[in-house]
Image (tube, rainbow, N blue to C red; front, side, top):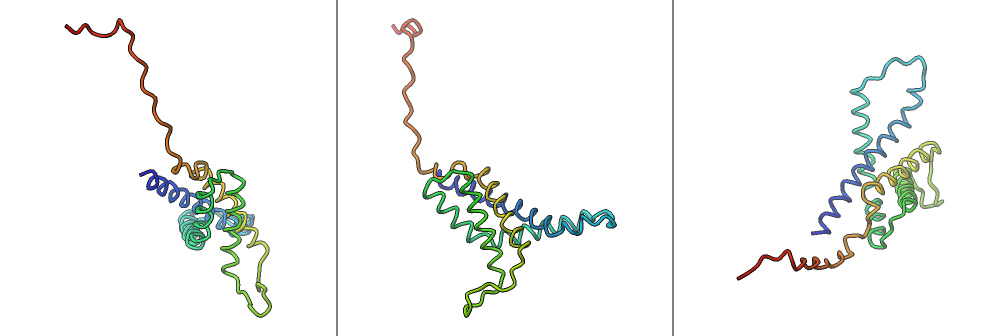
Length: 164
């Protein structure tokens, strides 16, 4: 039963991390548009749609690498925020490099845009910290049995009813 509860917490943490990561990716990629002083107000409906697509994009590409990081941290009882930030950065890096063509002849990625790489890695770091806040602080705790309960202290002798 503890494992099922832990899996639910992991899923909620993953969704929260993906939402924050998607917000960062969408916000950072649209920042040049927002910084233009000549632009008028931004349509809130368009922002909502972009945030939804950012969430779907990040969650779809990050599922497998994030599951590997979660499995490692759960198995080794790793509860450090720094470990989750580094793991999130690696997941963001893996998500970005998964979209870039790789040539097996030269063993090089072709067409890496440094700004996009930094955005994805930074979003992964923040998403890792968000995951740590939701679920990572108690990693592996479901395997530790709770301590045995101590019996209650005896009642004072004057408080027992007289049985005759």
